[in-house]
Image 1 (cartoon, rainbow, N blue to C red):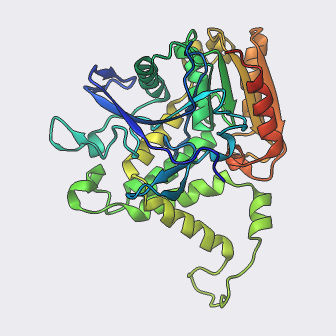
Image 2 (cartoon, helix red, strand yellow):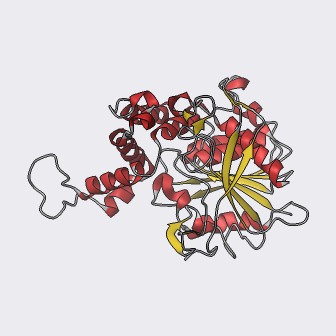
Image 3 (spheres, helix red, strand yellow):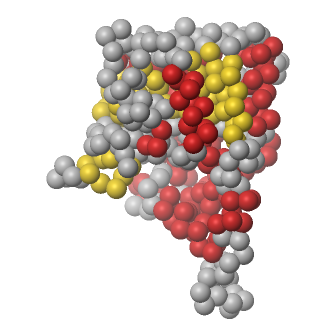
Length: 376
């Protein structure tokens, strides 16, 4: 059960143009965010939680319906945030933001382009991890937070936490980089491209301007999510949960849903396609592909991370084959080589890449122990 209760989102509007790494410019933008806990008088207890590819600002608690009653919409990291939990809201002020390019309230492809009075669609620029961090820094300014006690996240969120220590080394004291990597492997880029091709080739995509046609590329987005979901799970988990079990009445030797795993993936695909924006999915995966702090340092991660001043906790999971523990150890190796403060934990978990979302006692204990030592 949620320890937070009912929460509501807030929106910050920014009128100063944001110049993007790819060359584009957003003349103005909105960031939707939620907060939990209380910012202390010294403004020293704030933790920024960065979301992964399909995440958003709603980290914990429940949203309310039109009558003020709690809905079933529980935050995606509710199991780790709240009174007495690792991200203790009686001690910390937690901030969750929906990234630029998102589809949960922040300015993105579905927002109205002031230049055309139509949805941005395909004209919305590609955004990068660096752009997200820059926009989050503007939000921190608005909230009066000069320095984060910690920035943390899993997967793509962990990459943002890492980038914070590089873009704004004086504004983050601790970074919790969970189930992440210093850059994508060729295999991961390939997975992302296949997912994007599923969307781009959907007849309902209309070059990204599907809003004007009153349709959505549901088939492509559904396939993209099914592919992605396979990579988030471990083989052992799929074997234990589904195995080769056939559905009741299966055995037609046709192409309908026969196996339980097929049913599960199609359910996940349909569920995701019903709430997510295809243009956002394209941009989130591109941000993953482009992330590479060592690129400007001749592929030398040691040199790239040398400017970071934060202390680090790096966490990896044994069955995560999308971002293997070896990728996390690359970050640890570079930090150790520089003499920077870093703690590393490799957690045994059966849940694959999705482990960072789970209520794993050992994992939560590691995060809790680390954050207990954060001085405010």
